Image (cartoon, rainbow over all chains, first blue to last red; front, side, top):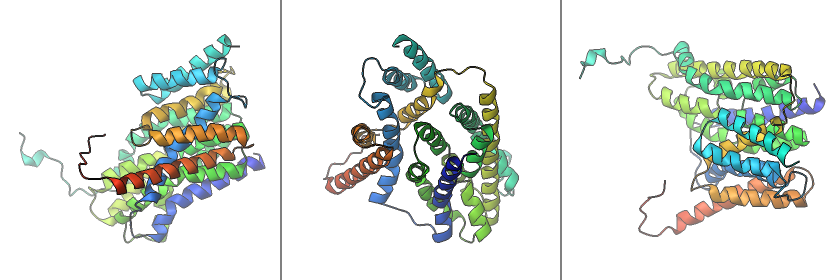
Amino acid sequence: MSFQLLETILLMTIVTYGSRVLPFLLFKGENIKGFARDFIELVPIALLAALVVPELVTPNGTIVIIKNPFLWAGILTFLFSRFVPNLFLGILFGMTVFWGLDKLLL
Amino acid sequence: MSNKESEFNPSIEKGFLYGLSQSLTIAIGYAPVAITFGILATQFGLTFWEAGLMSFFVYAGASQFIAIEMIHQGATPLIIGVTTLIVNIRHFLMSLSVVPFFPERTLPWSLGLAQGLTDESFVLNTKVLKDVEGEENRRRVMLGINSGAFVTWVSLTILGGLIGKWLPVQFSGFQFALLALFIILTTMSLTRKNYMTYLVAAVLAVVLKLLIPGKIYLIISVILAAGIGAWWRGWKGSHRVGSNSQKSS
């Protein structure tokens, strides 16, 4: 195992377990309200956007629209999963469409 | 209507085995995801036991998928660590709301029960623990639920890793698998209350990615977008006047 991967797993473990265990160690059971709660609730959806959209729009570091299998496969996967809300089928659909578009747009 | 005697008797002691049996629903849900994680992790360059180690220690599905995508994109461990923190800080909220079930908890129980807290186990524990009498029993039930889910996650990750390792073809579609997964998660979690945050984060991320080298754009755009979204919610909350008919979903 590379040192980088070990370091990655170690850091991930510390921050994840830390988030889980701190309330057990510190609190009797209060509730976070207001800005902090809204912020924490909105992080996942913001992260999904930040992870996906740049990869779809700028696969090679510049914005590409037409000859871009990532973008079109992404849009089609989005539409597909709106109608078929199944994780496994959606991934299969996305991979197949991407593979097809990748050959087609090459 | 049947008579009352045939109904479930709540005085039956619930313990570890009861929790373990309850965890079956999570196990069914985890199985395809864990196998998929194992396959993708090996397709993205990890060995099956490295994937298993990550599942064992980190034990947080979404952030593990994100991590292998980021490793693939060449992000540094520090950036991945910070990203994991902002993804998993939500466990802090869940943990806070589980803690009142265990007012007399000891240190080993605290350390142990916290380990198994995931989105899914949180939802199930919250539902199940309400109907369990006595803190001792609640601890054992939660331990049972957590153990079943954890063992499923780790063992099926390794199975998926072995499958991925022996998959003969290098199918180009695999490089899209994680993006597809995230897109599906997006459609499942987008609501009227959060789509603006999604759009702000998307625009910020694209612009910042073009401007700043490295992966730091991920963290900046997420913090800015979630911050703007939370501020907006607070502002709307304090400026809501009169006729509030709560029609939106």
